[in-house]
Image (cartoon, rainbow, N blue to C red):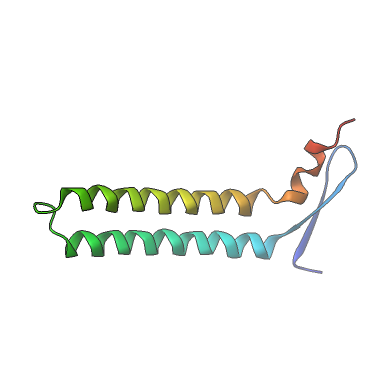
Length: 91
């Protein structure tokens, strides 16, 4: 299949990585980052910071959590479970 890239490790294990899925998840991460930033700016414009300082901190915390989730998604996309089999197998 053209969507699968097969790599060989030094211990002889075949590692199948679906490149298409990794690229799609990374693109999804970019969309999550854009969505989180747009929502952050919308809430910042909707709520004036002078009247509700607590909401400004919650808004920034939500942005930070969203960016952390997007970063976690990129880790999941770039390090699939089948790529880590070689590190889990003891010699």
